[in-house]
Image 1 (cartoon, one colour):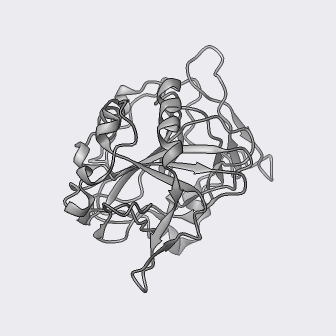
Image 2: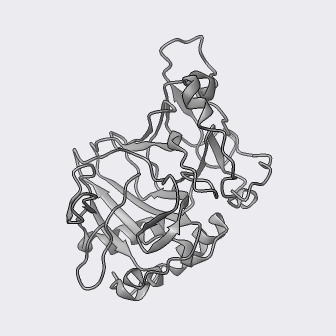
Amino acid sequence: MRVCAQPIHPMPLCPRFTAPLIHLRSCSARALLPRHASYIPTQCKGGKGFGSAKKTPKQPQDRRIDREKSLPAWRRETYNFREPFHAIALEDHPDLQVLGTKPDIFLLPDFFTEEECDRLVAMAKPNMIPCLTVNPRTGAVEEDVTRTSTNANVPRRDVPTLVSKLCALGRCDERQLETLQILRYKKGEFFASHSDGFQGPATANGFKNSARLVTIFVYLNDVDQGGETRFPQLGLDVRPRKGMAVVHFPTTHGFEEDDRTEHEGVAAVDEKWLFVTWVWKDFRTDERYAEANFPSLSEEKI
């Protein structure tokens, strides 16, 4: 779990109620991928969205694998979760694709439009600052050595259309959204392996005794070399494609962290832009993180 500092005005610092899985009509929905697999989205033949997976298993005969059984017994026992994960609006996204089921990882092509992506990048570009974090030992705000990208925080009032999309997908109130962030990775920049979840109730980023239930990130540009999102425990790489969202569930409603969702941002070769937020169990109530404290990045709204 990582806790990133976010801006508190005036100093701008960086930072499933369960439901049955519906029938997925994507031409390439995949519940399991071989280990190690690299998911490289391309246009599907005769269907919408992205869908080919470049498979590079070390042993060709191992084309399907139960990831849970592949873990040591002591690790499998830790995944008997007592409480459910959060339910997102799967039925509203017929092109949604399944990258994994243990744990659930979903991909949504074209979640943001090309225009929305371009406008987000243009809005954020003049406002990027180094990513900072709070030192857990000293409490000091310092540069985050595990994440070398730059960051801009986006007030919800700047992007009302996107907030509506996020809340509809996440089946949540906008007050459950963590501060919206845009990240830029230049050549060589990376985000070391980490989990977005917390074990037990957490107080962070304006939320008190709560939990991150859903991670949603959206790629804002196509990236041909480097910059994959890697899930090391699953043997899965996802190559960034413009407007494509990736969704996973770091914590249950019972405050149980699922560390199988551990992921990293592979070092960039081509420049990568990323939009990210998290759905929390409760509302953001710490006034220091009130949306009014975040300066607008642009007069134009998205």
